[in-house]
Length: 166
Image (tube, rainbow, N blue to C red; front, top):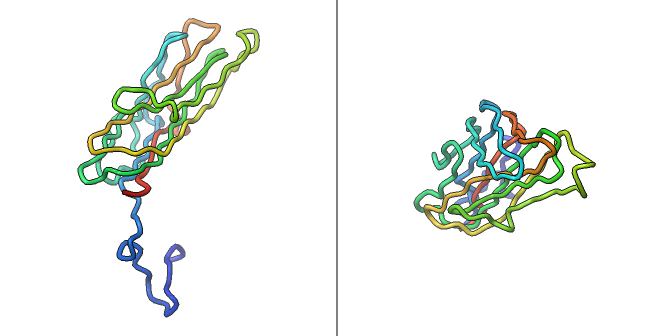
């Protein structure tokens, strides 16, 4: 195939036998099949991702990726959110075992609510060492000129990651 790597004599190169990584587990889930979520202005809200696109090790369920047995290591993790409803401050946070990761946080803030975003798309990503049974989740925060903010069910709102190396 087009993505095969061939050796100088034209045979397939065995990446795993040569000490390469296969980058599993891999997971990616989105909100495409979910319901609209609504949270109070100034409050955190936990995101769910009902549509699994890939989950090589059955390690993702609803909102949580749990590092499976035998797969401790360094991971690349990402999450996105799309906020709707007169936003002037918004944040997305990747969490590990219930604690926010500063290195997995992204925030945007306007000077005041006199200058609002109708829709604001944010993303967070990090490379992190994870141990077996570590659990990752995502939560959002926003302040609005209204009583609440919304996260819509869209494929562009997603959470995923993969193991880089042991």
